[in-house]
Length: 252
Image (cartoon, rainbow, N blue to C red; front, side, top):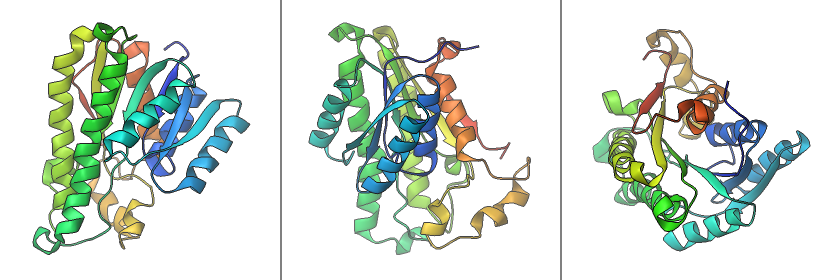
């Protein structure tokens, strides 16, 4: 059984869906949580309110992860809550468009890459600066959120999105090896189909139901099931795990 968490965890993109579930799970495990959001302030405040009502500690922190200056400011705000323990790189977008890659507008491709790849890099860079034992930091854990969409590439829907998640997998592998000697573990959780508002927002409200027969376990994940894997990877029970990409996909 893992010990109760301590210190501060930053969860990016935590105003809804998987990010919100991770924030709640981390708080229930004893961590103080910086609930990051880019534009959904009301959603982030709702998550914070729920955590506080349950006896946990949380603060809403605004930052667009694709902007390095805002990322630094987010870490500064989180530092005011206490010592940093872990960072969860969850913020990600699809561009809310469905179709073949050739039809994705250039501005959508750029924005998805900016958030899903550059944003993850910027957050990882700042996390290493703050956590590295070589810089006098306490060590800690970075967990990136990828997707099992990297397996098939999401043809006909989100090839551009799947490509960015492939980059997250590679980043995890490389960075884990780079900073293992600095007291930092870097891992990745790759959810499969998950019951969030992601598909509905992109105009596919029935996509989860259509995919269920293709999943060996016959159903999509709940966000809380993904969150459980993330918080476990942050715990001492996973102390010898780094560079892993853990699918949470029901076998698909």
